[in-house]
Amino acid sequence: MKKLWGNLAASAVSLLIVLIILEAVFRILFPFGPAFPKSAYVEHPTLGYSLAPNQDFTIQDTDFIYKVTTNSKGFRDEEEVLDAKKRIVIVGDSYAFGTGVENDETFASKIENENIQAFNLGVGGYGTVQEVRMAREQLGLDPDVVVLQFFNGNDVQDSLGLRKMAVKDGRLVYADTASNFGAMRKLQAWMIENSRFLSFAYLRTRNLIGVFKYTFDKKEQLYRLSFSLEDYSEEINGRFEVIDSAFQDLEALSKENGFKVIVLIIPNDYEVDQEKFDKLLSVMGLDKEGYSQEKMGNVVASLAEKHGFQAIDMRAAFTAGDYFPHDGHINEKGHEKVAEALGEAI
Image (cartoon, rainbow, N blue to C red; front, top):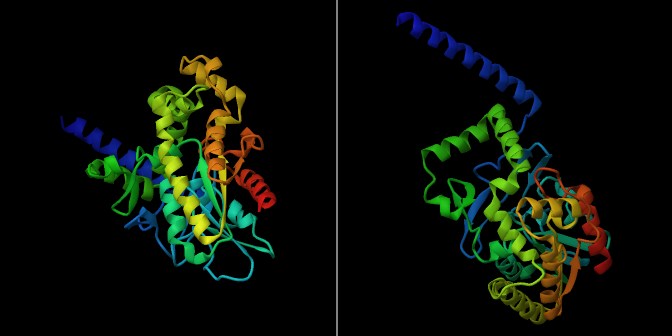
């Protein structure tokens, strides 16, 4: 028995040494972690949460490494100094925020020139309702144009509160898990934030699962695909009522304050990749004859035009190469295409 305990102790020590060496190596290879710091988000009385002001940190994932800085108001932008240029206020989620790209690589930054000043108010996880509230709260910027970025992947869910987020211990989590943020979840979060080796292992595992995500996340994928049906049910049509209502509020704001509204529609990656779309339908056991890659964008564009907004659907311009392969956000090339489209519209 004593020999057994001795062997176990020796194995434990050997394992610890290996882990220490691996951690040291991965800290050299991956100096930054994949998680936002605990201080990155704060609670907000009307928006639920927002980015904290005066942040400066770097995120490293398997697809990218990028730096995030926020100004004194918590926006991923320079300090707000109004000048005589045409002012463009951009509200949206992580696609406007610019997950995966540098501050100066976002489409908000790329549309700026000697005649245009843009303000990037994008916050990851926001839905249309929050974005309209954000536009209302930032009317002091006196915009000439408000760009509302809409992501086909989850903005309906976000606006319906089906993916409601909350701040817990300084972290952004799904609201339904915030009350159950127990010791194991805290330990998991701590390991990802503090260990480069474990965070790398987590990301690789996540990406591996991502290869099979159509099977693992079948309920989520079926929900998303329901918005690509050629013929919507009454239930699905009803889900767009909250978007319509938010657009109505934004229309009233635009008339009261004299600004133009552009609804920028960002498609899912499978909406621009026929092969991926067909594969997804096949894995889900669905008949592709009943689904359309254009449907979601067409519905959102129709709602936008109903309220007198200009709609820009990026589906025709985007290709699979405009997205990060694992993360799914648009890369710098994608942001460049958005900036070109917005520049023409503005």
